[in-house]
Length: 209
Image (cartoon, rainbow, N blue to C red; front, side, top):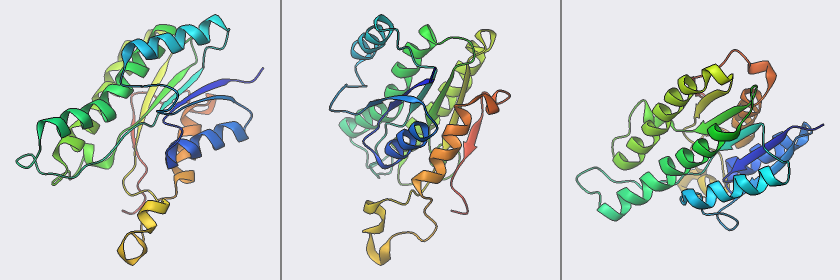
């Protein structure tokens, strides 16, 4: 029987690549984007998991790729922008992970997408960096909380992702951007029995950026 994977943020470049990678290996993928579910709404997330449970389709693997970026120093940041970035980048991962933590079985795994700015740099993108740092800490805390249940929780930290939007930038975009397919392959590894020894990790996936 195929494993079931839940990919949150499937309409983004990275999310779509994760869906493709997991589907290609034979997983049954539940792909969620903002049109299907408001992942900032904890009640909606819980309702989705109850629906999946009722159909006997609880995921084994959960990938949280939802995020967004707005650049601003802390001094320049407006309250609405800060709240939006915290909600989009941190709360979506938190509510999805909470629902998963309540229902995943032993041998399951959660992978959150943070960012390089969570650990290094971040100047000029204060609220974004703080939100992504929160994703790393969420990952570390949940890995400890779920260790006895043998559920693994890890994060990947991309930086520049090679997308049509990045290639549309002046000069064709950053030459060191990482293709989303390469990041997706790391996520797929973490969502596998081959990564059974890896939990609580924050893995850089930004190449030589």
